[in-house]
View 1 (cartoon, rainbow, N blue to C red):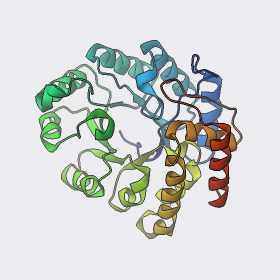
View 2: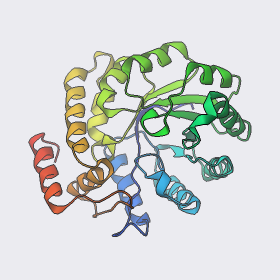
View 3: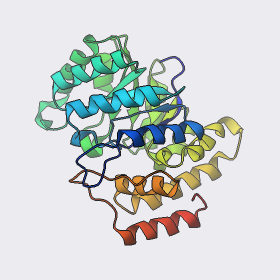
View 4: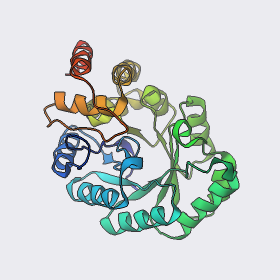
Amino acid sequence: MEGIGGVAVATITPFKSGGDEIDYGMIEKHLELIGREGAHGIVPAGTNGEFPSLTLDEKKKVLEVAAAARGNMYMIAGCGSCSLPEVLDLVSFAQDSGADAALVVPPFYFRDAGEDGIISFYRRVLSATSLPIVLYSIPMYSGLAISDRMIESLLDHGNLSGIKDSGGDPARTRELIGRYPQLKIFGGSDSLAGEAVAGGAAGLISGVANAFPGLIRDLWEARGGRGDAAAVGRKVSDVRKVLAAFPWVAATKAALELKGLPESHVRPPLLDLTGKQKEELKAALAELGVV
């Protein structure tokens, strides 16, 4: 995990109209944009990448294309699935593709498995690879947060390397940073990005950074008094509020279109923005001065 930190973009997966096919050429254009605007890393095939809607082969192809197109940016490969064999396959593929780490969300369907079941799942993943593993705490989707008991039960594995905290509680992010100095703690909530930076997070894994990586880079560079972190943090929060006023992933893709990239779409059950919504989004982002 040496050299992994700063601004990582939780990248979208662009689909062609109707959502049937992935636009792999668009992935290359997108990574060129975010690299040019200052991102340090990428996290493909995660939540913003609509990973639950991808087949195993599609996930592998997304990781393969992203690895080849990332330039100098590091890559934390999204390897999420409720299926343990699929996660093991993805982590192995990610390692062979040159990923620097893998992001693994808890299996989110059998919620009655409890913490012991989740610990067993993660132990199998950690034991099957030497690739650094980042745990993904996103209780709004997975139904449970990564607890201290879970972390402490896994710390004996040398490749447990970090946590992406998307729980939405800045106090918890600070607690993780202070309690587990041996792990890299990444802020995963754009609305709390400023607090994560101020609290000493190793980096930010940002959805806003898909279209506005320079803004998130400005926030990162302002840490430790090197700039007006509070002002930049407010702007990040304002941009995030605008995007969140619409269906999030579709709004992110529409914002990328405003940045000059080709039109891309979401896959059902998600829905594209309507023409009216696109106009409203454009006006709101223009008012903030970001497009």
